[in-house]
Image (cartoon, rainbow over all chains, first blue to last red; front, side):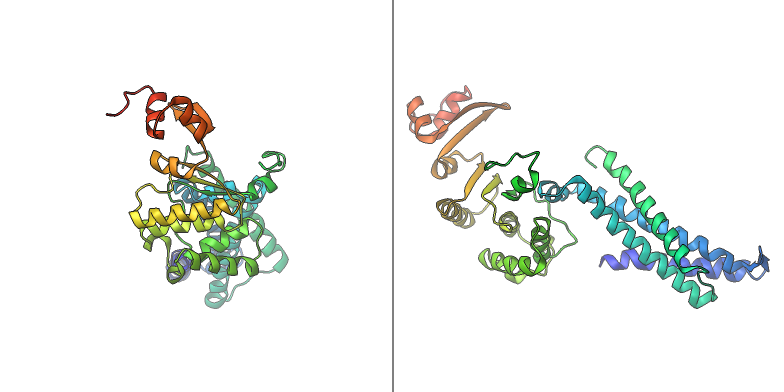
Length: 146
Length: 183
C-alpha cells in the first residue's frame, strides 16, 4: 500500500533523529538558547518532513502521471489547467500536513515539547507545504515527456 | 464539437467525447472500480451517481469480479474492455477509438464489433483508427485514408469504392498509397 511507503519512512527517520541526536548529543549539550537540545531540534524536524513530503508528493505524482501517460485522462476531461494544478497542490499539501503533524505528535509524546501558538504553527506549516508543493511541480512539468 | 467550440466552451465539448487510446494509460494505484468512478468524477459525476454507473459498466463488460484488483492483474482483453468502459462512463456522444482491436483474440474482436455496431445504431458517433481494412470496410460508413501524415481521401465508403472501381477497401488503399495492388 502507498501508505507504507509514505508514512513509515518519515516516522522512523524522526525517531532515529530524536534518539541519535536527542539522546546522545542532547545529553552532552545541555541547553541551546534556553531550551533543551531535543526541543531545539524538533521544529527543524517538523519542517524537514513538511518540506520533503509535500515536495515529493507533487513531484512524484506529476512525474509518474506524465511518464505513464495516465495524465491523459485528466487532460481530456473538462477540467481547466487551474483545476488540475489545484488538485495536485491540494494532495501534496495534505500529505505535508499529515506527515508534519505526525512528526509533531511524536515530538509531543517523546520529548514533551509542542507548538507555542497553534495558529502560527498551522499557518507556517500550510504556507511551507504549499510553497514546496508548487516547487515540486516545476521539475516534472518542464521535463520533456517526463 | 456538436456545436460547442472546443477551446472557448471546452467543458461542454470535452464532456461529449470518450477516448479509448491505443496504449493503456491507467493509474496503477487505483482499483478497476476506482478507475471508473474517478473518471466519472473528472466529468462532474458525484460518487453517488458514478458508483452505480461504474457497476453497470463493469457488469456489461464482464469485469465485475476484478473490480477491486489493480489494472496490472488484468489480461490484455480485459484491459481493452476496461478502456472502453472508462470511455463510456460519462455517456459521451462521440467515442474515439485508437486501434481498438489491435492484438485481440478472435472472440473478443467479434464481440467488440457487435458492440460497436449496436451503439452506433443507438446513436453514438464512433471515430476509430485501424490498420485492419477488412474491419474498416465492415464497420464504417465514412472512411479517411492517411498516407505519410497526409489525408489522401475522406469520403463515404460506397463513393470511395465506386470512384476507384475496386472490389475491396484494401485495393483502394493500396492504389491511393501508390503501392502495387496485391495479386
